[in-house]
Structures are given as structure tokens and as C-alpha cells.
Amino acid sequence: MPASTKTSIPDSPNAGIRVMIVGDSMSQGHEGDWTWRYRIWQWFRDQKVAVTFVGPYTGTVQPDAPKPPAPPPLYGSPKPTHGVKEDGGYAYGVSSDFDSHHFAAWGRTAATDKGLIKDVLTSYPADLMLLMLGFNDMGWCRSDAPGTLRSIKTLVFNARSVNPRLKFAIANVPQREFIGGREDLPLNTKIYNNLLQKTIPGWSTPSSPIHLVELCGNYGCGPDECPAGYDGLHPNAMGEYQIARAFSLTLVNDFKIGSSPLVVPDDIPARQLPLPGNFKVVSSPGGVTATWDAVYGACSYDVRSRIAGITAFQTGSVSSNRWDAHWTQKGWVYEVQVRASAGNALKGEWTAIQSAKSTPQTPPGPENVVVHATPTGFDILWDPPAGGSYVTEYEVLYWDQDSDFAFITSAGFKESPAHVGKLTPGHHYHVAVVSWNAAGGGFPKIVNSVTIGKGTPPTPTDLKIIAKDATTAHLSWTGSPIAAGYRLWFRNVNAAGSELQEVNGPETRLCSDQYFLMPGVWNFEWCISAFNGNDESAKCQPVLGPRPSDPDETPANSCSQPGTNPNLPHHLEGDANLSGESPVTMRAPESADTSTPFHNGSDCQEERYWEILRAVPNA
Image (tube, rainbow, N blue to C red; front, side):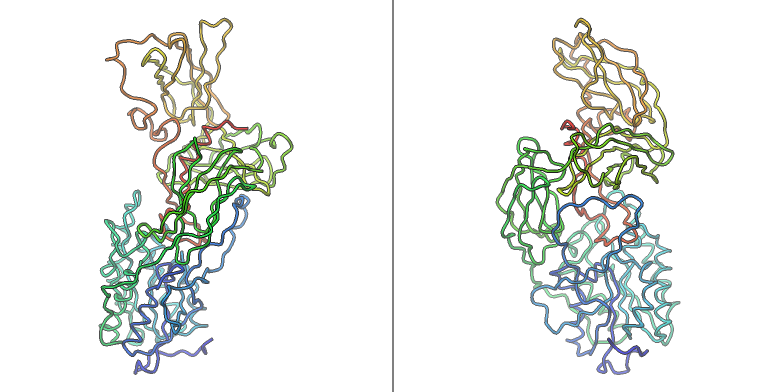
């Protein structure tokens, strides 16, 4: 560890400058990256400028280790703390002489580093700071543009309290490729960059000068396209050169370090992503598991899979060299193939397809689940699964249907009853419960959806039935935003002793198409009830189905096609199987070891899963 003496940039650069690079994921890099830190180090060497890079870390972020699925933390328990992942290596070809010390970490914000910088500089004294922070503050909604600027200012002044002669080259924030629903981000980025440019001259002093690094203008990434980034933000091999060049321009022009800025070469080495070796798909206690040899330099792996005879092929993503079937049932046959991935465009070759039959030893879902809304959440209680299955934990899944960007979220509980709080009043949530044992999580038990902060919904009204043909009926009715869903009831009026029975599965729209009504639509009467959790309205007055009328009078809209009923409230848009867009953006938790906002990390495809859950009877 260097001695903790306070020094400044020597008059002669040949005497050696202690350089600290402070940043986030764009500066730390992923295993297999060259990193812009390496490119600026090469530039210093080419310019005959003696430097020593300082900081507590030396590596890139390493890939996740393969491991089986695990239940979620218990609800309300303290968030686990994670150390900085910095055991990752660099690209093949990086010089063994590379001085890789730095202070950059994935998910890092200026709001966090402003409180850490004193201790870091005390342990690792520096003469020059190359600072590149701010994106995560605004991207993860930790702060707005003025708040991010305040964090940068505090970081600077805290650093100066350790070394009053410390020099700063501060980069502005690059734009990233546009993400739907985050129209605020390009605007906030522009506001912040304008504020930074106008403000930092006032922070500068003769002994501790600060100069702007025009990163946004030199990095080839913006809302329309991002050729410099592999995922819409993080630098690829070309982007790494561009970032290093932006810093070199400030070092040459403002600090008079070096004689000429870095030139981005025309010939940039390509990242190699070979075919994953030793690929296997096998039956496992959790159902089906696929494993393969890790590919050095892969940021993630694309997994293409389907349940034979049940679903079409779907492509998702995993962060390690293991994939496990999610929410599976005994006897399902999974067909799987995998390829290495380094972002949106750089992909390896697909493996051949392998298959295996699901043999889960996981427990079934709980019995007799009851859900009631509370002012800001819901209460849920259940009985253990039938058959005496041993359960180590229960996972309550809940999914906000009124937020444009929401994950399926989960919470762990050891036993019933349970309460989930801090939800949005008036929003509608799908709910399910998963039982866990040593083999993994079982197939979720779908239960009644719930509207937060509401009670029993009113009885639906104005039920209308149209015979689209002799055996197909289109039903529509007037509901209430209090309702989380609707049940359909029917009976054959010409069958002796017939009673109303429920159609399999609830509806989330204010309409429904019913098929194969033999011996004809006009033989069946229907009624509707509305529910909010286990609080349910009375059934509406029964309505008898008509005989088919003139085909020209049959409405064109169909409840099997989302968006065809203009009278539906927002929360019910989508078809009866919940198909539609699968948003994945969220606000990161304060302790998250994040990559980049809006990166489709696990690509879990919530709608696809919920469709499967509804299609399969709960055991």
C-alpha cells in the first residue's frame, strides 16, 4: 500500500503521477473487456508520461457462479450486503504490465462514492482523479440532475479534504439508447451535463483545478443508436477507445499532460465467443437443468427453450453457465439450446438442441389460500400442501398490473399467515404462492388477484351476449375498478336439474369469448360475479344466450385479441391469458450490484409464465 502522504501532480510528469479512476460499471468493465482504463494506460505509456494507477480494486466484474435456484429472502429481513465483485480478468492480449488499480464498481453512484472517497484516498493517495459517475444516480432514479450534481460536488470537496492539491478531470454523462417509459432520462442527462459544464469552473481552484471531460460528445451512444455500446450503454471495444480519447483530450488541452490525444484505431480487435462446450440437459430434482462450460468473455448466455407440445420456443438470458426450468411439472419435456452473448449484437453460435423430461421433487402449492386487501397491501393465509409435503419456505409472488414497468416480485415466509405491504393503493396485483423444499420451488398456486386498498366490488351489470355463430358466444359487461377480476357462471337451461357452474379460470377483461357451446349458444344462460381477493360480489341477473343473428351485425371485436375493446379500463388491457409487453425496468435497491438500468437481466418473460400457470390446473 502506498504511503499516505499528500502530494500533487509533480512539475515533471516523468516523476510519476498517481492516478485514481473513479467510476461505475462503464469503468470497471466485465470479464473479457479491455476496458477504457487499459486504453488510457496505454496512452500514458505511449506519451512517455509516467503514471501509477491507484485504488482498492484491480479486476473487472466476474461472471456469476452457477448455482441452483434459491428461495427469496424472508420478507422484512435486512437486505444482504455484497462486497464488490472484482475478480474478473481482462481481454486476451492485455499486457501483463498493466497497472489495473482503480476505484470503479458496477452499480456505483456518486451518491454512494461521496461518502467513501475520504477513506479510499487516505489509503490510496492520488494526484489526479479521472471521475466518471452520475449515470446510475439518474438512471436508477436515485436522484434528479441537480441532486446528482450536488453529489459530485460533495465528492470533490470530500476528496479535497484529504488532498487539497488533488486535480480532477470530470466526465459528463453519456446518453444511452432510448428505453420506453424513461422519457425523463435523456432530458435529465442533458440538464445534468449543462449544469456540470456551467458549475465546475466555480469549484476549481489554482491548487486544485477541475476540468470537464466531454464524454457525451465523444462517445458514440445516444437515444437513437449506440454503436459504441454492447447493450445500449456499456462500452464495446470501440467505445472503450472513445472514452479513453475523451479523457486524453482534457489531459492534453487543459492539464498539459501528454502532447497529443489518443487516436481511435481503425482496426479494433473482435471479441471471440466460441461455442459453449460440454453442453448437457438433464432431469434434476428441480425439474430440468442445463449446464455447460463457461465461455471466457461472455457477458451472459442466451437460452432458447420450449416445452414440447405446450409452448413455442422462447429465448431468455442467464448470467451464469447454468439454466433451470422454472415452474415446471412432472412429465414435461424441455428442448434447450444455448449460446454465449456479449450484448445485443455480439453472439456466439447456438449449440445443438438437447432435451430432458422434467422430474421435479418439489412440493405442490399450498391449500385453501385466502387473500384480502388492506389499505396498502394484502393479507394472505394458507394451509400446507396436501400429502404431508415438507416445505422449507413459502414464496408469495405479486405482480402490479397498473405500473408500466414492473417485475413479478416475490417475498419469502416461513409460515401462514403473511402480510405484504408498501404497495400502491388502487393498483391491481396478480398473486400466487410457491412452496419450496431442498429440491427447489414447486409449481405456483395461482390465487385470486387483489385490488389494494379496496373492499368487496359491486355486482357487475349490463351483461350482453352475442352469438357469433351457433356455438360461439361473445359476452361483455360493466364492471368496476374495485374488481381485481371476474368469474363467469353458466348452465344449460334445457338440462334437467342443471345448476350454475363456474367457467374454468377468471377473466381480467370486461368481456369473454366462449367456444364449443353444444348444442347451441341459445341453450345456455350466463351471469357474472366480481372479486377482490376472496371478497366477492353477488352474481348478476342471468342472461340467456341468443340464436345467431345476421353475420353482418356480429361485432368484429374479440376478447382473444388485446386492445380490441376501447371501453376497457387501463388495468384490464390485454387478453384473457395476460399476453402483452413484458416490462423489466425497475428502481434498483440501494444495495444492488446492478449492471445497467433497463438491461433485461434474467429475461424472465412474466406474461409467458403467468400464461402457463393459468393453463395448467393447480394440483
